[in-house]
Image (cartoon, rainbow, N blue to C red):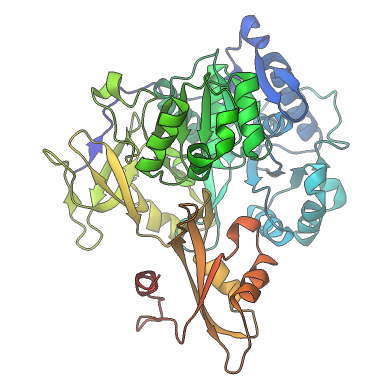
Amino acid sequence: MSFASPFADVEIPTVNVYEYLFADLTAEDAGRVALVDTKTGTETTYGELVDRIDAFAGALAARGIGVGDVVALLSPNSSAFAVAFHGILRAGATATTINALFTAKDIAKQLTDSKARLLVTVDALLPHAGEGAAAAGLTEDQVVVLDGAGLPDGHAAPEVSFDPASHLAALPYSSGTTANPKGVMLTHGNLTANVAQIRPLQGMQADDRLLAVLPFFHIYGMTVLLNAALHARARLIVMPSFDLAEFLGNIQNHKCTYAYIAPPVAVALAKHPLVDSYDLSSLKGIMSGAASLDAELGHAVANRLGCTVVQGYGMSELSPVSHITPTDGGLATIGTVAPLDSCGWTVPNAESKLVDPDTGAEIGIPAEGLSATGELWFRGPNVMAGYLGNEQATRETVDADGFLHTGDLAQVDATGCVYIVDRLKELIKYKGYQVPPAELESVLLTHPGIADAAVIGVHDDATGEEIPKAFVVKQPGAELTGDEVIAFVAGQVAPYKKVRQVEFIDAVPKSSAGKILRRELRARS
């Protein structure tokens, strides 16, 4: 049986993202600081932000970009990213956000698949961006450099009309399970619904200052940080990349009240001696997402910093949050505090279920303790419209009843609190980034000295993270070392996708149908 959210339903907006975030902007709010670029100290007020968004949308419209067009955005975090992203949506176009660590080959692939008409980037990424754009058939004048010439000013925002429930706002790319990345079609309705679902539980207020180091191009940073914070009229302290000293210094200097992180940052906060050199007393809480946070690690961070640590769960296909722990742990709303090894409860206006992956039987909520393990399914207004140009993958992921099959194995307790225990899918999550084994296996098999290969995620004792490990079968007579294999892959993929361990084996275990038996490989790791 399915179990509904224990939280009160919220009003799901029926407007586009721009209207939802900015239509009710008051004169007082317009004077509030929305974004602080930490590298320059530049502050952007809400009024200035809206003006810049309108101008960006007008400039796009002047170039003929509007409803039905896709614009790619390749940039690290900055106020300019926020302007460009919301300017694209304001113009009625769809933003496909590209990972700032992507190679030219990766960029070209996403540009081609999304049919982007324009690429917006920054000068530091222009070498890869330009090469990727050219490979995708874009001309030089179809590449806009935010901190270069940019787009010409002086154009009024266009009048656009579309149905927020069906019109695509964002097109991030997700690997889903093991396949190549697919465009996740998120409507204006998806994005506004998810902000509405999480806002009452985040505890975020206009006077809060949020450290924004999670990349805005990632759906976690896009919704949970950028959009939710702007809706709350909070102040975003924007970092373009992670550096521990700068991270700590920004919390201290800007008196940040909340920080949103992925588990690798938690390791540093729990163990690094540098933490003791900074005053972090302004922090009320830390929210961890993008991958599972170990409970012992979470408690270590909470005890060291003297603030609340919670975690949630989601995926790009869910806009992304499906399960959340309120900032007080759930005490006020549920009457109990969620254990730190859980991801909390189903968000409002939604429902979950657990299904035995072998029998298809539904698993009910237990009277006490934890339920049996099953695949987590979810249904709500934040479920994607589907995968771009891939109806088969969409049908395999979202069933006829509207439940999205997450591919993750979970348990549930008597309160409906969910615990992620494993994943059915073979996707590796390294530092919160998705690493599909099939992609790395394809790269490995291009090496003349490699006869066969398989990749799995393994636990790194030193960092507590999941890392990609390659099992390699050498060609007869080939001379090959693990370091050479690592270097070969590193030369062809984004840094976070690199193979980090190598083991040479005689044969890759496979089923009669030729499927790699990853469980056997995990058993020997």
